[in-house]
Image 1 (tube, one colour):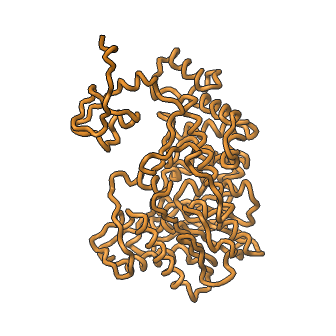
Image 2 (cartoon, rainbow, N blue to C red):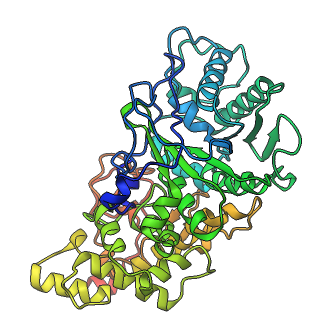
Amino acid sequence: MKEIEQYSIPMSSEELHTPSSVGNDSPEHTDPGIGSHHVSTELQQLQLDVPDVTEDGSVTEDVSVTDTERDKVIIIDGQAVVQSITKLHCMNTISDLGDTFIKRIDGITKSYTEVRVIFDRYITGSFKDQTRAKRAGKTHPVKFLIKGQMNIGNISMKMLLSHAETKSQLTEYLGGRLLEHFAGSDKGMVVVYGTSTLSNREGVFDPDLSTHDHEEADTQIPMHVLDATAMSTSVRDIYVWSPDTDVFLLLLDLVATYPVRGNLVLLTGTGKLYRTIDIKERCDVIGPEKSKALIGVHNFTGADWDGKFFNISKRTWITKFLALTPGDEIVGTLQKFGSIDEPGESDIKQMEKFVCNVYSSKSACVTVCDLRWELFKTKNCEGEKLPPTQNTLKPHIQRVNFICRRDKSYKDPRPILPHPKDNGWEQKSDGKLAPVRCLNKPAPLAVMELVKCGCKGSCQGKTNCSCHKNGLSCTALCKCADCGNIRDYYIDPKDDQ
């Protein structure tokens, strides 16, 4: 929640005391087995005038609600609900887990006329799958066959959700349970899992959305906001239930780009951390031009798919960005990311200028080469304390453009995206994608070959081996033994003279 707060300009005191125009629906806890879902730390300190809430998420003061006659649609991140579930001792089967999930959905959606539950899609070996594996760390994934009577008494939720194929089966099972549960309901129910979009009756969503190619719920949620708006001739208020920062930024991009009738509200957190974020109001305060650039800012300054700038916090980047004027060329460049095939030299120059401004606002440098030399010369800064080189920044900008293109694909159910290999990544011998860290070698080859590792035993397969990291073979200088990474060197007798 903290990061979303950082993307928000504080409202004036007058705005803060204006009665809220959004509803006071909170995702109440209706079952003791359901704990608070994980809320992004970027959301936690959002500067909004929100009502006090009790531990169960219910509002304790009156909130002005306008247009109560409007239909209210809620769009839910289905996997976030699954991850919010605390597994109790009485939860012995997948069927029990399904019952708890249904009860949680009922609690969230009781005051809405239409519900859309959207699950992530899980593709083994995909770029997103690699990102999830990186998050999981050393946890070994275990694959389960999902059936209603499967015994999960001794299986933790973490282990149950550790494998991509298991999660894919589980989303299909829970999606089917939802459609069965809402089969005779007056509410419209739309469920998205795998590549399919299904509903409990006809005419709830555009048939063009029946199949899709999106992998993440994050990009499908704004797509369904647009669809829910278009499918009704009357004005509707749309609520989005998600803890994800990416969803918040995509919704800001949406309202800054497309006309959305009615209110658009993000619901996040539970208990004392429950928040209702009026997206249109946030966009007005930040400004439409900067709102459209925030996806680029977020991806450029560090997200879960890549690293971040050393010792430069997200708050610092956002503060510098929000201080720019809407017409600044840097804002225009950040807006362009995701809408262009390849960042041009002018785009790279603007991002260099942005980096220089953040690393040293008092410097007149506009290129990272000049700034690196100035910081080294005047402040004795070395290594990670210096900004990245041009040859490191360029592939990073390529990756940012690619991820922004993926994020902004929410407009199309079947977007055509380029391969990451040509956009700042390289494909290793094992088929996995790895970011191109620099367009040049970090040092001349003669110096690189002096690199030696201190591995004990064989360093074959070790990711922390300095030789492996630099794509070098081990030599007699290395401390490893019985190593499969050694190559034979030919010494010319003339060189020994």
